[in-house]
Image (cartoon, rainbow, N blue to C red; front, side, top):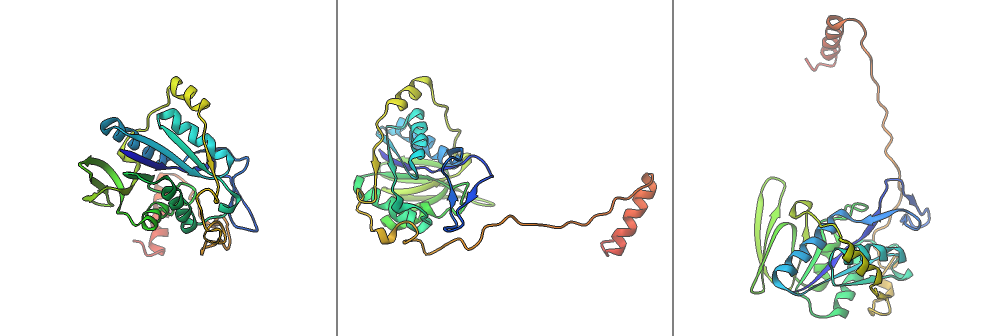
Length: 260
C-alpha cells in the first residue's frame, strides 16, 4: 500500500501570540509538537503497512521549524517525508490549505490511502481532511476508530456521538482518525538516529504548480476579525455559621431563586 499521512505541527502551549494584521498565530519561536490526532494517523499508517506491505509518506505544510515534526514521524518508522514551505502559504485557512495539499498529491501521483487526524488542536475545525478529499474527488470516511483493507476495499468503523457506523468504499480514499483508534508508538534509538540523517525535501508553491491566488491569505475566503479571551463575571455569597445554619441559609436562597 502507498499511504500518505498529513500531519500538522501545533503550539505546545495555550499562550500563543496573534499577528494583529493578519489575525493568524505567530508560530516562530513557540514550542511545538505534532498534533496529537496526527500521531494516531501516523501509527495507523504504519500498522497498515506492516500488515499489507508498502510505504508511508509523511507530509506537512508549515514554516521551516515544522521539519522537526517530520523527523519525529520518520523516527516512528515512516519511510519518507516532505515539507511544504513557502511564504505564499502563510495565513492559509482550511480551504487554501486543502488546495495546497491537493497539489502535493497530484505531484506525487499514485496513492492508495490518505490518513489525517480528526482535527488540529489549534484550529479545531476538522475541515482540512474532508476538504482535501473534495479537492481530489475521492471518497472520504471521517472519525475512523477501526480500519480494514482487503482487495482494494476499505472498511471503516466510525465513532459517532451515541453509536458506531460501518462504512465501506473503494480505494483510493481518505480517512480521518480519532484518538481511540490506536496507541502511537514511541520512537526507538535506531529510528531517531535514522531520522536525524534523513534528507527531507522542501517543496514550494512553484514546485507543486499551485495558483498563488488560491494560496495563503489570497486564497482564504475566511478571516479572523478579532481574537480575545472570554471574560466572565461571577457573583457569589459565602454562607457562615454551623452546618445547620448554612443548610437553612442555602434552602432560603434556593427558594428565593425559585429553584425549590
